[in-house]
Length: 136
Image (cartoon, rainbow, N blue to C red; front, side, top):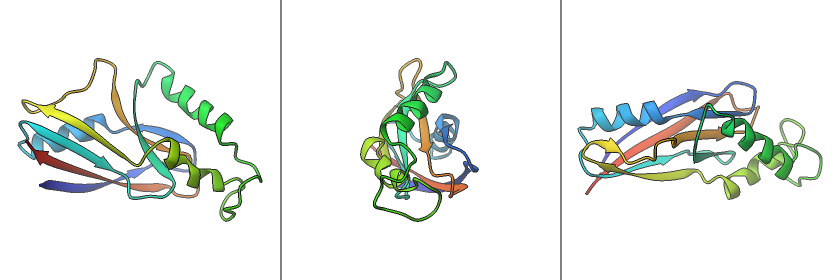
């Protein structure tokens, strides 16, 4: 298995950060042909989504998460910024992993699909993301 970990600066705001180019570079650097790219976020307050970006869907996702998981005082998990408990619930809805087929050295994504880090935790400005290639 070929694997590496990168750091992504997400700053102090909610973000959908496109990882697709980093995934493509990893697959190319690994000399991958056919198999699976597994992407993992080792955090309790972030997740991964396969979503269209740049046409408003990324902003729509953040809006939907704010409506579904409001940053208010309802959460039992209380530390950090107000409403931070909702960030610990996020991975139940946006999981911290994704597996993408690699065929002939290319990610087998649909035309508008991107691999994105979803981070609503404004208290953690830097995230780790692990890429692993499993040859088929």
